[in-house]
Image 1 (spheres, one colour):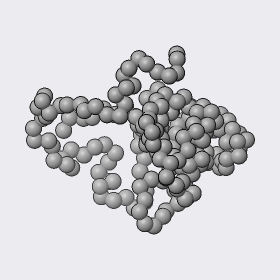
Image 2: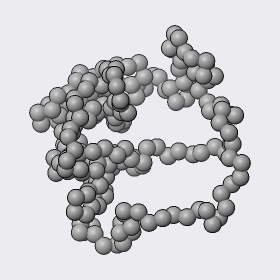
Image 3: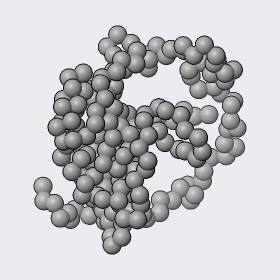
Length: 199
């Protein structure tokens, strides 16, 4: 199969019932720029820039209820699809700056924890979304030198860190040009040069 080149996480799509409180936290407290704000009556979809390539987005659904607060990484029973989001910071000092900001604003923040390949700080946003802020340890680069330290790995895990050819069927035929259509979506108006915010 032809390799796919990924460029990071374009966005994580979360839910809030109160976009203004969410903006105050992600933009004003954490310092992430609000780069897309689109909506219509009963619907908003806003994006905050985490980095040059990654964003976190929120749908505002007024009838949604915040999730139950759950500690990061603690197993649960029953239906579940998400545990927490980890955001990388460029400097280790950023972890302590975030701890200070969060606690000054009345949010709980953990101690900085050493996980062997990253140092992490944990907290929750106003929607009770579990957040981790992580800084890579300078002496351990798992992307260049992957590590297996699980004492009981599965047979699939033992096949190694790289994609295994033949694990899935290859597409039998490529898509024809007439099958490569892009359909209009909610954000069509974003291509317009018009914006309520002026540069």
